[in-house]
Length: 590
Image (cartoon, rainbow, N blue to C red):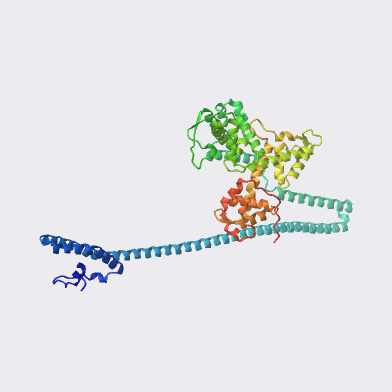
């Protein structure tokens, strides 16, 4: 018979009387049973060894038995505690499931409410469109009724005049009948009846003509008040308006007070303020204050190395203020533009600007000059050279805008020079007008008139008056152009805004909505059919910030996946040189 191990012998022993086996674990779930079985297997060797010690060490058997019983009692207590917590665990699982179901129900309810709100929004939008259509229909009806009213009024006037003419004809017939009766009884009168008849006829004609003139005067001047009453009423009305303006409006600032504060005294302030409105005078005053504060600074605090800081301003510590004059800053910026136009433009404009300063002033002073130039161009908004350089440097405007505008001005000067056959620097107003129309065929008559007035034309001018056209393209020492070139720039910015406004109107969507690449391309081709493919691709690349090499071909399914918020796309197009290429085709008559 093979020898049995101690555990096997223990298992073969009969169960002691009074000892019960806890079999509740049979009703527990499988995972709990496995866990308990694993725990029992881990403690079983120790239990058996301890029992073996009890049996072998007779002297310490009572003590060891007490220890064993104490541990057994503690384990039994822990089992009871675990068994008591099992229902709580199940309840916790149930509560968790209930909470999840409630959350899912709430989400479903919110989703349903959102869908209802979206439907309500669509219904309201349709209602708004319907109301707008009704408004347009009512406006058309009002226009039609006004037209009918005017026609009816003219009809009634014609009937009134015809009635007067008919009455005059009836009177004439009655007078002729009386004349005939008088002619049949010549003995009654002492004079020649023929002569009297003729005199009576002439008198009646005069009376008719006078009556018609009187009726005309009443019709034309029946509502006219005497001049004296009109002048008195006009004077009273003007006085009341002045009182109302003084009561409700903000007092107009007295700009003459600035002459004693601005450096240079009254003469310089008069030069700065000449031809400027209140808004422009505020800019001038702010520039004077800013330049004064700038001259007082000896150092600028470095802006650090943050990602939001432009690369040419990344520095820690104090930077010296070089304190150049306004003229020096303008000349430096002009030199920078000349060098920029001469190179191949492989680097970004901010990097080029800092490299230019390093070449001009050396690496040790480049950062000081970068801070100095930046602070100056940030203040002087009214200076063309500074404001345009600042816009390009900060990415608010593409440098192509500046370059193209300069090329247009140069081309215009060339056209005027070609028209000056005598090379005297003079053109007649008629030649000036012809050159403007040929150079800018898309400009309206109103825009051409504005350029003529900026160039020196006025109401008393004649076509033969001579104009010194070269003076229109001159600049002062601070880079300020003449009003003619400034007007060209203003018209370009207005035309760009109008071009983008027409594009938005053609797309027919709100600024916060998304626009796809095909839809934006189609809108551009609709408002400007003369655009070539390369120009359209350039605009699309800018609007969607995609390299032209990565843009999908026209008609490709991938085009629909390229989307952008309309406002963002228009702001990006505002940065570059975007302008109308040809006239917009007239819409087909309905």
